[in-house]
Image (cartoon, rainbow over all chains, first blue to last red):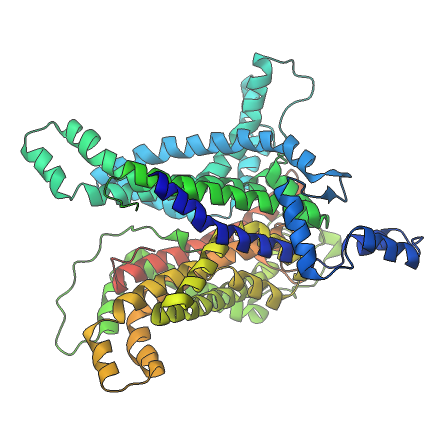
Length: 331
Length: 300
């Protein structure tokens, strides 16, 4: 097992290097380097200053040397300085990762809690009305544009609210965006307030994963209940509950573990859209804002962070799969 | 992009093949029985027709501004679906936007699948070090946070139709390349490939005459599902302002300002999103049916 993990780690090295080259390329592809952008925003900069600045920032050096230096800085945790926020990018991200986690973790559990039971039920009652309903839902979930779904939810629950007319129900109206009401005292009121802000964005963020997990649970369960060992369990006279829970479900959930681990980083990567629609101050929104604002250093740093996250969860998925399924050879 | 597949309808029990009936005929017969797929196909045909004939159907010109009737409600002032913040007729823009969105969808999906097929065929057929390099490249692209990268590239090069098509295509080929590689690996050691090789057929002949035609099922299914995916991606990029730029309408950029007018003119946000949703849904229904008809065992 240790050898397997070690081997997977070694296999990750070329991929990580490839990604770093692509990321560096993204930064150098940017129209204008940081000094050019500085000149554009300040006409008083003199040509000799430009040359001096380019030398200080090392922009006059050949590209491969710049790459090596950039890689060295990145590995040591120096992701550069944001032009628009006037702050090191690591500080910007540190403040926002927590906010993103609130949303991502909630959406993740929401997706799992709905998808696994629905998927199992769908598989056990294949072609029943509820199965059709669930499958239709998965089609909707993967076909709906996330940002539009978000806007529609805002409309339904924050703008158009017939329930405001019904006295006392106006508390059902949810905030259209943001993360908390200013001035709410700490403790329980804070969390209740945060919950109100989280309902819409976490549902929106969860939808795609929910649809994907439901689909995988269903198809994996369908595959497993046709296996011989399930028939054996039934023929031994075991209760249907035991057959499903102990024999079928446990095996059916193994592939789901991979999908789920692979998609955690996907949740993070999908968050930019949701976070922007709901003005949620997370890492994803930082990415969108810095791309739009032309702050390419910050944008690229967030992308790098997301890519590392994907790498880590890919490893988690592989190791988890090998741990759970003894049929996987890992040497 | 091919995350969009779900099995909905029961796999039609393989109808007894009649003598002399070819693979594609059988597939078409199976597809016709798949109601959702046929429904999806019909809607797609209608949408394409509406886009192609937009100049004749649309009540206004797409850049025409009715300044006296900005934010007109639906059915008001001669605007069936209302007008937007500048006084554009929403229905007209929806029709013209359909041209852009569908064109980007088809072209990007086509380039992605073509690229994926190329990579998959080369990797699968030649194997060894070439395969290794190409598959590591696939791994790298799969690890990228693609949406963020597209956002950044859209900001750099965006605005134009071609640029959007190229960048979506450039990052959407990975799933196809893996699928095709798997197919080729399976096919290249079958008897008919060996026979062709023994008869002295050239590599190109084996690839184009024997391998590719037999690997068409997953390629076609992936392409169909990719159209939906590409439309979704274009919409999101345009919504963020780094895709298709106004005044050229696309369903995505029509939603760009819609959120700020949600309180006063919610219909502006409703229609473009509904069109995206409907179109992508139909492509997914159709792709799903195609998979069942061509090869139900495909895992896309």
